[in-house]
Image 1: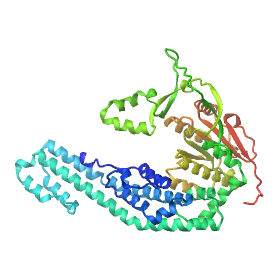
Image 2 (image 1 turned 180 degrees about the horizontal axis):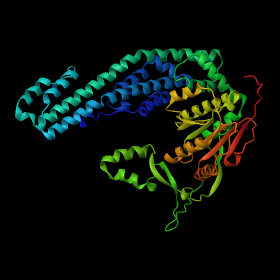
Image 3 (image 1 turned 90 degrees about the vertical axis):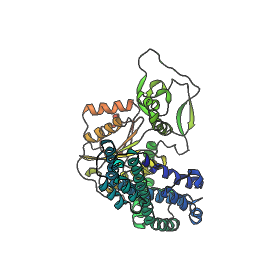
Image 4 (image 1 turned 30 degrees about the vertical axis):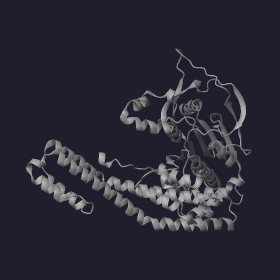
Length: 486
């Protein structure tokens, strides 16, 4: 309905506002135009607080603390607002029903006015005026009067929603501000006193959901420290994250010039479907968005966020002339981590696996990259690491148990790749590889996905015979001694 079309911001908008502040210090209201959004106005007020600015700007650790605590606050607030909006859906349905009364000339205006009066007596709804108007039988079916009443009802609804949003925000302000000021002072002091390096802090802090306590921090830090004891963990993480090598570069082939080889009237050049904003490779379904004037905003949003569905051609590579050049590796696709949680992984293998997972979570956050965890023993569970933090925390609280079967894990992985049309994903299987071999058809599916650009890596913890090597692009191995002190 037209009266409900006020601009709403999603989580990504607010995250970008906070990100811009910690990176540049910019937080002027003029950057975002005229707005009545209380959450945005509150964030801008916090970022313009001199005591906050002096702590956050120019200090990398404090900037990270501020970013994490603030964005988590925003997420929680929006979740609460979403819940309240769901509760209001029944009232929106009543508005729609009222429109039908106009068309069908139904009675019932007295009960409707009483309800609106009870719900919006503090929101300036002029109930006496409409009671007087509908008292005239000729006016009861006057669509002009009904439409004005509905417009006033919508305005009262919006005003009440705005007031509720401001009320909810006021109830949380003190907690956020105290939490920020305490964390921005105490955490850096603790890190300096205990000589915690930044990388250890970032990884451990990312697992704490913005809730600082030294006991949890030190327990997580012990797991993170395994990366120094076993450097292979970092090698795997960097390979999955497509991060440059220790010298800051990675040898990759890049195109030189523009040597195109386009096939016309020949066998199809289409290799698959991906996402991006190449207008020359749009799927017909995306062209429909552009052709429909009412859907052009959707098309433009997908274009600017590079989420348009496009054909992927073999000739994208264009048979380029090649030269070897040192340049940063390119990020493509999500990371899918398949973690063996069977009983044979209990103990140090479990801690090493968790250490690698924590590092991958940090990489995913820094790169704003999708990352999924598929845990498996006999059954499987899939967790969207960046969005389902509660499920992730629950996973870390449970010990590894049970037997091992990779069948369902592989099926879940392939389904995720197929349903989301992921191109160039990186899949990692962490296990001791005491895994019975799967049926040939599943292994064949692995080969098909590798041919499409998905890379399959493995981390073997232990020295058990491994029958999976030929099916992976690369398998890293870590040998460890059980009697080694943790």
